[in-house]
Image (cartoon, rainbow, N blue to C red; front, side, top):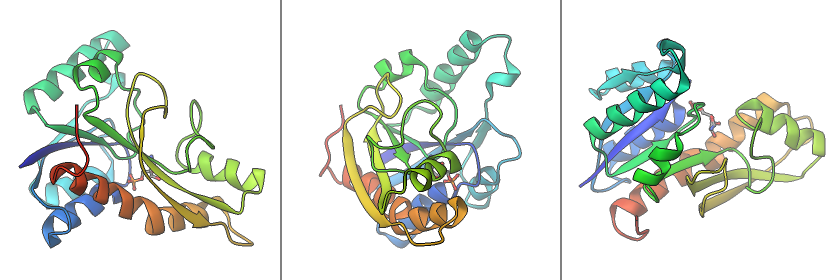
Length: 200
Ligand code: GRF
């Protein structure tokens, strides 16, 4: 059984896609053992609560320094003791020590086809704003392993999505979520849980 910890910051629709996948059997051999969120008001925490998943609020804002937060964050993760950490819209930088301790056991969903529109400053709607400004005709989403860089780890899956005339960042974000993110992230979790994708 693959024990996963999901880290979130916002609405939690990617978390919900994983919850639904575990429930409907499309994600096999997986248990969501915890959700960590840096925002006490995030709807993602309600999704966890509604599904009996322990939720933990941990924010750099509640610590004297980033170093203190990083220590507390890593200690909490070790206490939860997951096999895999899934970053699903988590807007906090992962401490370098965590990327070492959990090397090749942290995955992230990014709302573009990496290496386009990724790295520092590219998150949430900003990614789609950049894609529309550039005028790309195809965008999409990427699931990748997390290393010490920003959106630089080994790519696991990508799925392309068409940009349509008249798209706003919000419309494009929704299409990328529906047609790409909510498909490839659950698939990546299932394929890790069933051994198709090797960890470590
Ligand atoms: C998603 O678009 C994800 O790609 C990005 O942040 C957003 C999180 O959305 N990293 P949600 O919290 O999963 O609804």
